[in-house]
Length: 187
Length: 75
Image (cartoon, rainbow over all chains, first blue to last red; front, side):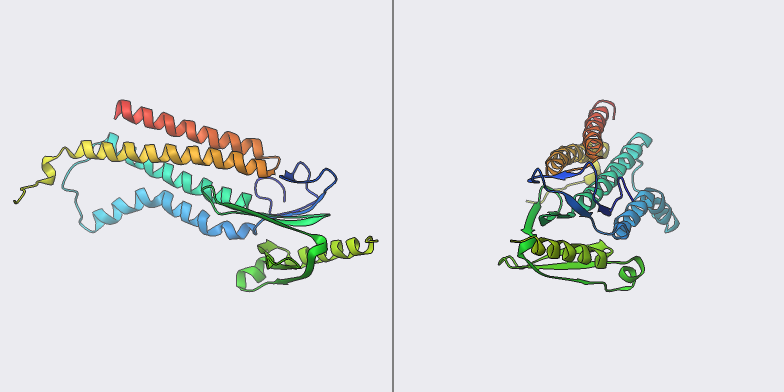
């Protein structure tokens, strides 16, 4: 799966991140599973229908506005509402798109973007990785094969958590293989 | 001292217009923050669709500004 909704990319082309070394190669680029976008997509669709549904419910309930709102103002209110919905959808997409987990031939990088200029980037070299585990729990996670990959490092800063990534078993295997390869080449 | 305040004495259309314009102003501010965000994030991670995201953010801002001006002038 490539393009705007990619959530699992191996050896991606045309991708680079800040601080990437010249000879550093991206092995895996991960995002949360595409299914995790369902809540905001459903919310957006519901929000789009609110201007149609709410007046009908109010009219059916016998509610009458004490004043008359001219058509131009009604349309302006609708327009404002759709802008807010658009903003919500765009921001939700950006949060999903820029929350990435990168595995390179040298390290693992976790880019966390929480929205509205709040961002955290952490990385750990493959040599410092002590243990990797994964878990898949829940009906949706089992059905769509996504879960958490925990990477325990030697550093004090506890562990990395790749949240809701697709094919967690494969991710763990790739990281383990890279560590093994790295250790074999260690003098 | 008691105030005899009648809400309907105020021009409700004027209030509505103020509400719409303030909403659009907040939207434009938000859109500008999104532009800054997208540029910052594209510095952190560059992909094939990075230029398109920048364009989308800029178009969104222009659309917001145009809407604000349009409603200021014609509502």
